[in-house]
Length: 49
Image 1 (cartoon, one colour):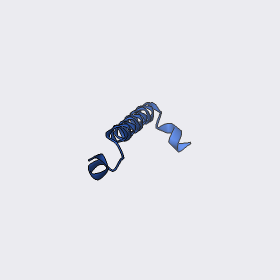
Image 2 (cartoon, helix red, strand yellow):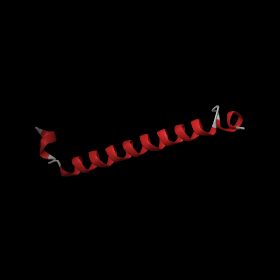
Image 3 (cartoon, helix red, strand yellow):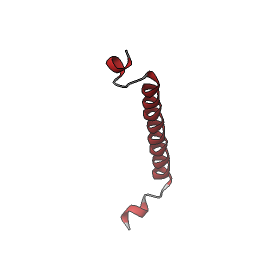
Image 4 (tube, one colour):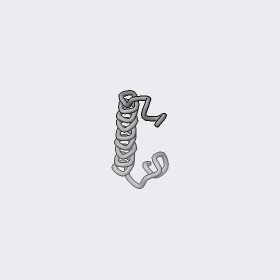
């Protein structure tokens, strides 16, 4: 049933793929939050120089 509905040979592979996507999404989200915080802290005068 896994190949038909999940696109993988086994359900374990489907779980692994899902966890990879979830972890990559979490990392990208954290990087976005960090960059937003840094941009808010950085002085705006630095852009004009």
